[in-house]
Image (tube, rainbow, N blue to C red; front, side, top):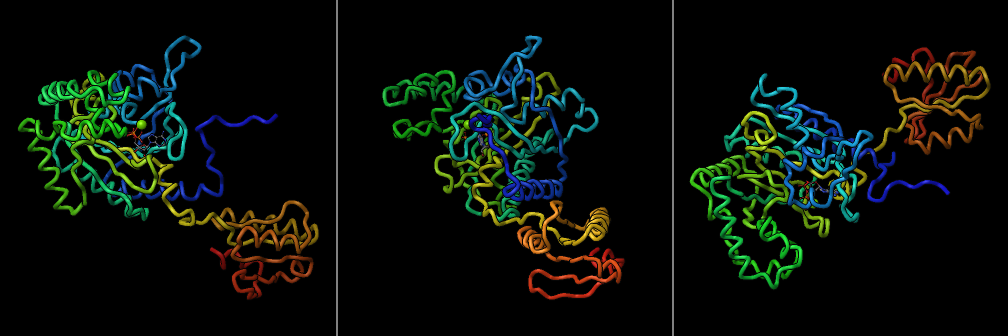
Length: 413
Ligand code: ATP
Ligand code: MG
């Protein structure tokens, strides 16, 4: 019996990879414009890193992590998200000592032990962005502008930006207490999950998808109404700058994020095109996170985009595969050898060239050229070798031109 892959972990096949490359290329291009540099961290980290940053009572740490002991008995975890590893790297490599303002992005796989379904996998890819060292609300607006810009660039418009503020360690504890009190009066209609977590993670009850939980908490106190002066000011500035930059958004006072480290600005980019997996990107501020991981007291803000969800939303035709510009069909040993040399020379010069390697008939070689979507074909036989001339056929209209073999390179480059 053949061995299959792991449930919830998918192959990206050659036919589909063009869309992925397009998304990655677009991200590099757009984020680069805003001065963000790429960072790559390992997929494996010490378990402690995620427990300490994401929070012990979050869904991710409670039940979604791929955690195992390595051969020395150390607890390792496949990264479930990208922010904590990037912060770990900033601290470890003292990046902030060189420049306290860092703008970084990453592209790579994340791992969560979730129930696989459309748009939700156990290995999935994120494109993430982190801006470190700036508390100014202009950077919040810039990050959101960049997210907006990226979605425009890739041609996905069916998304809307929802923002909220979660307050800070000065104002949230008081709000949290009030919310717990409020929930205590209404425990019965809540789902078992919310009944369990309303004391440890009361904010999460607010964005529970279960209808009875939503219905029971429609008039719950909102964080934005309990912000301290500074957070209130910060949030109104963020909205002001978003308005100035003409980035469309709505304030969703019920939106909370599933990770403990978020403070102040939080946001999600949602769509109605993916069923219940409605978030295509999400993020927020995490002032205090770097310090809590043993680094300098630097503020930060970032987001992560789920790549699979973008691929599901994008028309698969957006990007074509790399069809050859020239397919060389050859007949006879000498011609095949000459074609092989010619093809290799063209490839070195950056021309996408291809030929047959299976000793096929001329007719079969032409069929293959067609199947690959070659732009041109060139037929070489003994006559062509002797004269140094061959017919270059344009596949789109069948038109032919006579070309000198030694001038082919100039013609195609
Ligand atoms: P969700 O509410 O869909 O579970 P989340 O809040 O857990 O999302 P984040 O941790 O904020 O997600 O990750 C950012 C983005 O990564 C999400 O908006 C989504 O697009 C994507 N994402 C998260 N989990 C998965 C997954 N298991 N499979 C595919 N994409 C995912
Ligand atoms: Mg989740």
